[in-house]
Image 1 (spheres, rainbow, N blue to C red):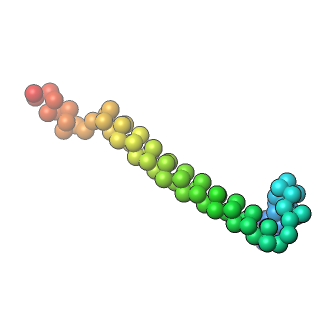
Image 2 (cartoon, one colour; image 1 turned 90 degrees about the horizontal axis):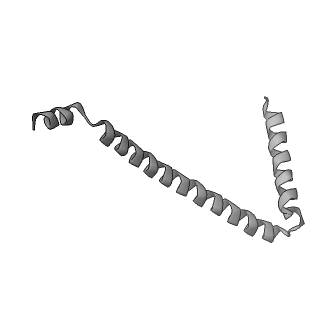
Length: 80
């Protein structure tokens, strides 16, 4: 896929976005507010997803480690 077709595809996606949201009917200052709000919400969504996925992965890893245990802990449990 060359650069020209990629840019053409991205432009087509942007036009589809404008048609779906009817933002092509907005005035320029309304578009700035609308796009700024959408980008802020997308940024917050990505940040929240990053934080939550990292926390969930950390919790799952700790739970898995507690189930498996380390060989040293298992040996000490047998001795006691």
